[in-house]
Length: 290
Length: 158
Image (cartoon, rainbow over all chains, first blue to last red; front, side):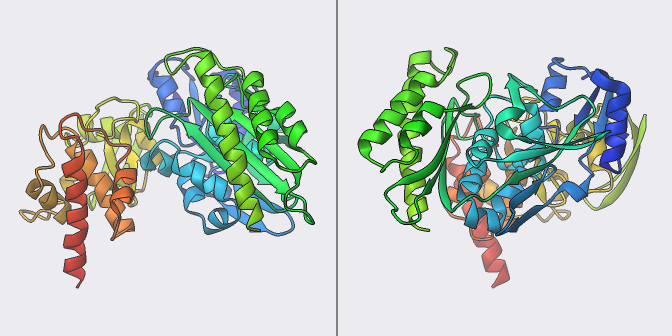
């Protein structure tokens, strides 16, 4: 790891100012569970490290019926996993966290850090995207809010400006729904080879009809991909096996997997099909209990 | 150089370090506490597992500067003089140690689990230790040792 000048900031403003001053030569450090590996491998060599792990003001999980779920960017994965309100209202997120890396990584790594690292194989990103999450980005000039759909640009690249800090994740509530996250991986602590997050809202009157659905595929493209064609054929329709099969088929075509050590492109497309079917069924089951 | 002050196994420690030093390097290389090992150096194998304020963490993946002022517990701090911790006893009794390289990490991760969940299921144990790799034992006896240790703790409470 290269030597660097180290700053431990007391507030976000200080962080933004330092980032603004040092630009591309500075990197934010939250949990460092991704960054430290990149630095150790010399893939990045920042001359300035701005440590924001100590900003406890951004370590929170808040929920109310009106505005939904708000998660501070410095909340650890473990906090999300263990949170009573997350387990009760957003079971998909708690379940996803249980499959994310290992306990020790989850104890120190942060949700904001995971999103900003923008690994296309992230477990967290597709799950939050399926929930329609938006993120608050705070810079020297103020705040802006982006839907997570628009936040990811490419492999390890987001719309975060060089002076900005991701400060909050917001999951708005738009109707009661059920979600499910499933991943295919060789070992328990692995990133997904293929990951799928599905969130479905059923019609209030007729619980056999899908009012709205989001299907997000992770690890099969340069960023998490919304399976829009699959969503479109299910939205507003009665939920049938035929519909689910077709949604899965469309998802497997719209995914953009790359052949690598974890499997061929064809293999990954098949896994997409399976996981889309399974997550839809599980999400529907969850939604029906409400 | 930065000043690092923290508590390790109950003792206050102060040192001047380069900020690019990981907690594992600080413990192992600077302080000579060789129980906390660098296996993979990338947060996957768990040989570097220590407790920070009771939480199991991968010390090879944390800058030492990030744990200023915190309470660190390492394998060296478990035994009280000659008296072994019940987890250590259980590992020995259940032949859960072969080469011993993974053992400090396994034991610290187990300790964190048992302090949080005094009555874990086998599934709970396997999940808690999923971040600790062992090339020798096949894990079966390690899991058995942790369940045995939880039994020891429960008996001590009774």
